[in-house]
Image (cartoon, rainbow, N blue to C red; front, side, top):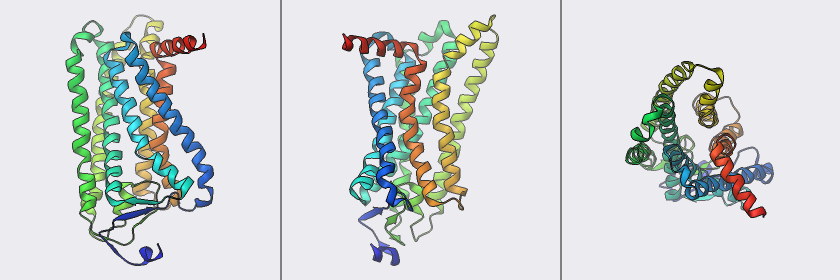
Length: 315
């Protein structure tokens, strides 16, 4: 490994993931919350998928999009956490170059997919509140399928250039990545060649795609708030706004850590490296863990169905 740190590596077949630089002695302890969050994410999101599949009354656009969100969270967390835990527990730091590119692609693809699903959910809330009598007509199953397909295709297309741009680089200063997974900036920084295209593309996708999605969500909620404030009573306004509570909480848990992590990676040069890596992991671990909890607590239909299942098992 020392040779890799001092000489250029041409067409590396493997990369070495260091984990969390500076906190190697604490890897085993750090693995405990990481593993706990991952288990909660798996159980919570599979529970959401199971409940929606089993309950015919939940076969509506809102819950179809929720199932997309649960599936995305499962893939996103699973693309990162198992390898991270293998580093912490077994010191298994090697990752094949092709596997590294695949991991990099999955991370970017499903992050874009998640933000697209939030836009679709905002559309559903807009139609449900502003055009309640036409909700089933506007968001019929074929329309929901087309919206879901558009979200998936957009994420697949926007994510494709990332591994290809990284693959263009043949010479690396080292094959040692100071990270727990193949994060794009962490890999690109090691390349000897000019990486401006890769860096600028990553920055453009992050801000333009997220900026457009946040703009569309803001427009939707502006119309939603106008419709809510036009209601005659305070109770009606609170009850209607309450239907958006889970969606708003899920978006905050996704966008705030994401924005903080991206800005820190790009501009936080004075921040210690292990804090960069920890924040990057929090961004990919916390939303998949919290989303099913948020929807389970805030959505009455899911909460009631879950209580029914627990009661049946208890008897």
